[in-house]
Image (cartoon, rainbow, N blue to C red):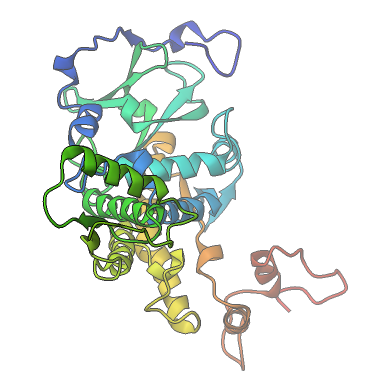
Length: 400
């Protein structure tokens, strides 16, 4: 394996190699086997990471959560005697600019979030300057299906399958592992195989039905009823004649039948099948699984599009959906990267949580001390929150 940061890797930085042994026997019970064997739903739709992302609701939810996390700065702080100070070291650069030479930090966090939401686990391999070196050179995101997790004497080891088929064995100290819901000590629960399996399968089936319905000229299926007996040749000729003339361009042109034949409708209309209602229900069901308020992905049927109610739901999205992912990420980084209470990582959510301009400015007035009330911020600190420089030198200082 080529070392990504220099022409040759240090001799002690080479990982343990395990040659692959792929067979139907050891494939049984794996994530890939489960996906192949159990991916098909009773609706006939195959639900996997590709097909699930074809459902617009899943795509919107994953994109919303991933984009929100990717847009938050991950600050590194150092605890001092009286306060904490922000540190812009190499770790800050890796997590906020370029964790891996092939991608930016925003793409990295979107990929990790996508892995957690759809597969139940996000993995990022820690690359160090040497096997025993504390210096970290980068974080390589790994596809969850390439990683196998095992417990070895109360320590987790990660077996990573490389592109050439070889496998590396990595100790838990060199792997960032962000599990999702239902962590069992090895892996989190895959939303594809559990919570999203039925609603996404129904949504895919509804999409397929809609496509077939409109492909059929927005008309139901018919049977040609012919009085008396007909032989096979007559049936074939009538079927061929009817289907060959039913195209999108002439789908509304009535067919001409002879010999007393008539058309009988066989299937329900889209309205009778409650197709529209089914699609609406699946939007809400998938949004519920993902923890996303439906209005945030464009489903505003039961939600007002303005007012403080929407604002509060947006703040609730940060507190109750994003925060459960952010805390896991922060704690994993702190215990694997910093390994002490001196330095720690923390996402800054203020940019997403802050309200409209009027509400924000009112909060600033209270913070600096309004109508004789004691203040706890000075104007220059507030200007920093708004990405503004300090006031001009001729202006009074913040304390004044």
